[in-house]
Amino acid sequence: MNADTKVGIEALPAYPTRIDVRSPSEFADDHVPGAINLPVLDDAERAEVGTLHARESAFAAKQRGAAIVARAIARIVETHGQGKPRDWAPLVYCWRGGKRSGALAHVLREIGWKAVQLEGGYRTWRRHVVAALAAPCPAYRFVVVCGLTGSGKSRLLDALAQIGAQVLDLEALARHRGSLLGDLPDDAQPTQKWFDSQLLEALTGFDPQRPVFVESESKRVGSVQLPAALLSAMRDAECIRLATPQSLRVALLKEDYAHFIADPKALVDRLALLAPLHGHKMVARWTDAADAGDFDTLVDDLLVKHYDPTYTRSLERNFPHSARVQTFTPVAVSTAAFVALAHDIVSATTRPVTESVT
Image 1 (cartoon, rainbow, N blue to C red):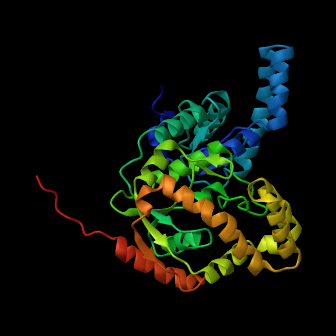
Image 2: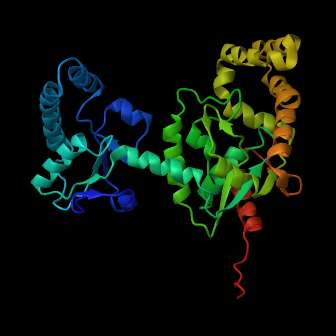
Image 3: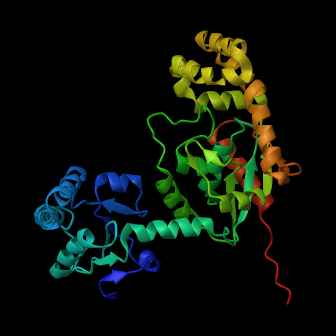
């Protein structure tokens, strides 16, 4: 490896400017966090070159690919390269760290910029992510936020982040609230690979000397799955509990799920999936409440009949330390109320630093 032109995965922090030259679909599936996509072959062009390789010859494919890549590199230099200082040092990568990224990095270096390639390309990054997430979780002090559905766990995490606490918001990374109704409107979930990459990026940014607040999640959050090592660390961690009054839980859920209130049919369609668990008669009762716009009754009944028993069983099974924990009670659903509560929780969970005994 030429140390002047290629770097390993350990050098990533030194290169915050990252260019992914793979096709848009490859980039959408997963990429190094912080990278921008400047493809030298788009999806159709990549398919065209692959077809030439299979039906004619490697020579024909290389000839066609070189012409396309050359034009793409010219566009990148003329647009993205404009105004960049002489000491600009982007890290460029493709699938294997080969021809696509090598072509762009070579031209950028010839101009005078300090471009480097990621040795092994995206495959090196993915192997790093898989290995890191499979290893025992680093010695972070997780504090798991427990509480029945609608208790305001996500709002508390937002408030904790606002006051500077360390927060691992798994539902934000997964773009899902973790329940049957948890899809976010107009916001698709990430692929498993992109979720993994974002998760590792978040974990490596934490200070192990300070607590990391995280919600009591199950193994799956929508369509994505949490790594076993992280789950194990969370389930062994200390817990706190939100004991939110029922009226506030109903009000909070109506705010968080306003898109269903605005579209009762979509809500009814989703509730129909609960018929195998609760029977058609119960689902018909919920449907009637939704059709009548009686969302207070509907939400209250869903909590009592479905969500509370389900969450309680899951908590008892997965978080053994949740039985005897510090309890905090939100007094309102406002941001200000949760920020005040966040300050109380940080004070209550902060441990004094003690000298080690040798």
